[in-house]
Image (tube, rainbow, N blue to C red; front, side, top):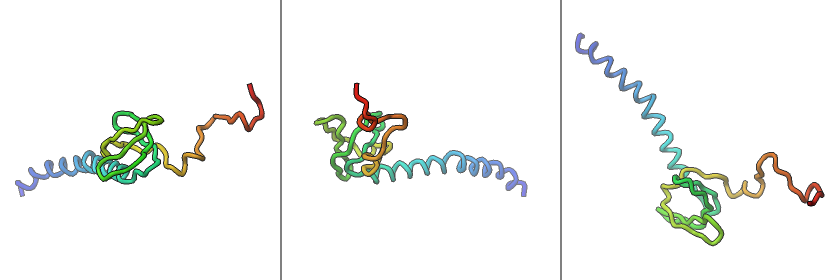
Length: 108
C-alpha cells in the first residue's frame, strides 16, 4: 500500500498534464489538418508567413497561390494556417461600415 500512495502524485501530474497540454494541442493540430485538407480552388487563404492569396490549383502536397494579379506561387499545403473566406461568401461579404457610392446617388 505504501508504494501505491507514493506513486499517486505522479499519476495525478500526468493526468493534469494530459488535460491541460496534450488534449488542447491535439485538437488544434486536428483542426489545422482539417483546414489544410479542406482548401478549395478559389479560396482565399493565409500562409504561416502572413502571405495572403487565392488558391488557383491544388496538387496532393502543394498548391498554387495567386498573391497578386499574374503572380502565382507554388507553396506547400502545410503552410496554410487558415482560410480567410470561402468562395461562395466572396461576392456577398462586405466589411461593416462601408457604403456603395452608386447606391447613394452621390458622386464627387
